[in-house]
Amino acid sequence: MDRSTSESPHTLGEARAFNFQNARRLAPWFAKGCAVAALWFWGLAAWQSAQPLPAGPAVFAGAWCALAALAFVGVIRWGNALDDRRHTWGAQALAFVTLGLGLALSVGLGVLDTTQAPDLVPFALWCTLSAGAVLMRPRAAAVWYATCGLALCVGVAWAPTQQATLGTWWFFGAAACAGGWGLSGLLWHRFSTESALRRSLETSQSELQLKQRELDRLVRQDGLTGLFNRNTFLELGRNELRRAQRQGSNTTVLLIDLDYFKRVNDTWGHPAGDAVLRHVAHTMVSNLRSTDLVGRLGGEEFIVLLPHTSAEMGRNIAEKLRHKLQHSEVFWENQRIAVTASIGMSCAKPTEALSMDALYLEADKALYLAKQRGRNRVM
Image (cartoon, rainbow, N blue to C red; front, top):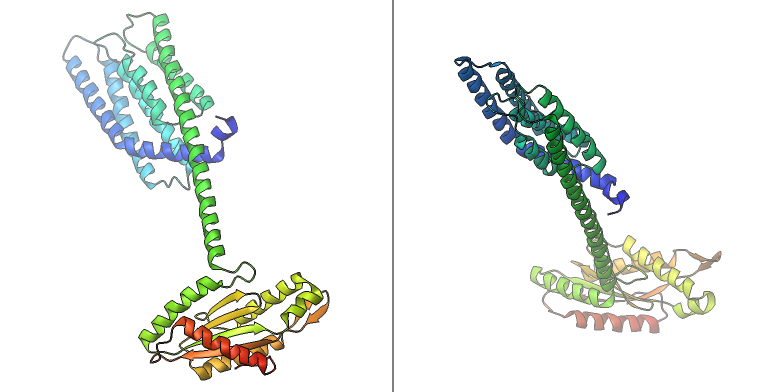
């Protein structure tokens, strides 16, 4: 794993959130453990008080455990009120508070028991568990396990009995710290690798979704004007026509063909023709209702479906579009390109039960008639 990847802001933020969730999940159980240990030590102290044995260290151990339990109650309350998305550093601090309390408990259980020799098992177990409880970068883990070793040395120095030599304690304590540090490094490497793969997968999925939406758009829309293409328009038009027949409303279709469009391409070139087509599409969309369907059939031919529109209303809308196009301005290389259109109109009443193909055919006949009668008109 690349170091820049394993220590990226995304990885560190995810690790803090993971630590925060772990601390909140384990806090109640650890608090209960501290309380049980406190009761056990206080009970041991009470028993030793009745025996010819010193009770001082056990009393101190019990006092510490009670303090740890109370402190952890505060940690739990803080953790429940903390939002890990807004306080990532606080979440990391909460995780290390958890580790610190656990370390003190493990050392206390091992070295402050006067009934037997100091025991490294709780300390070694906590070194192993802490590697999985809190995710740490290798350098941070090295500092933490060095702190664990120092805490163990201080605890041994205060232990009431030491039947084992300090050298043996240091050896096994160092082995426990080294094992915990190695496990912590392996877990961090696995977490950072999985985190990077997950982000890569999420990025790939997002890109795939964007490409899928773009593909859907290309399938349904005309690439030049952004209007519905022929197949999509006819499909939507059939659905709209059936809905109008069920609701008992009129439907009007306008077939629009630009006049002398070939001259535009021959005079100014196809880029100028594309600019004119985009201008016409924008003009129609800007002057129609949001419920109207607008499509490009191909070339310079457009089609409009007007739901809930009578023949009279449809003619008024068609004349409005024709007038807008005639008086609009399309400039190409500082020259104005005149735009006019011939419009054929057909209207279906709900009682006629006409199909979309029949409406299209009637509008096409009307458009042909408009061309014959001089263009730039509505028929």
